Amino acid sequence: MKKQVNLQQKQWEYSHVPIFKISIIQSFYDKSVNLIIENTNNVYYRIDGVTFSIQGVEVVTKPNGHIRFDSRRGGEVIDKTDYYGLGVTLSPENNLYYEGNLRLKGRDLIGKDFQFESNPFIFMEYKLENKEQISKTYLNKI
Image 1 (spheres, rainbow, N blue to C red):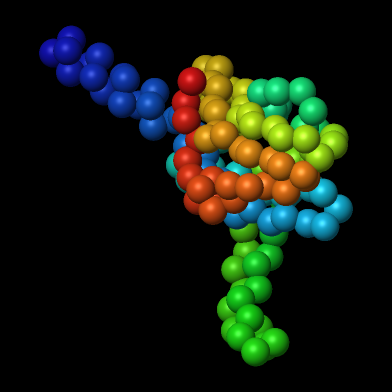
Image 2: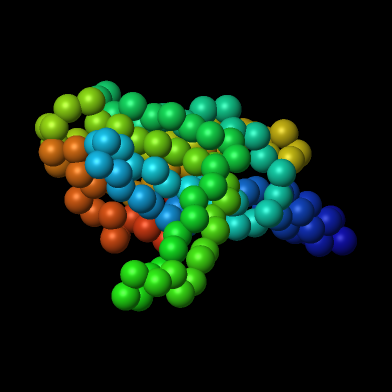
């Protein structure tokens, strides 16, 4: 009986952990990259900090980020997709080579601290080189 209670407690604690996914990445001409990080588990969480693993890339966050992606064919909008979640803007300070991870620190519904880390972002001359490899990926719990 005690084993079953312990198993149920672990499952309950795990069900309250947010699961983060990079939903969309947009690059802009002003040398910055915007992305939306979505909580796919739909549980409460609080973000205490978002950082980049190396110096030289500025991080700005918006708790209620929104990006609309319009699919076009022949100049006509054929589909609109809205992405909501934690908005993050990454801006390299100069045109050097940067490779680093985005890190999230926070607390879940039951008060446990968590940390997540993205796959590496590679910037070269202000441009995100590996956009296709990062988009639609889940952040790793550390």
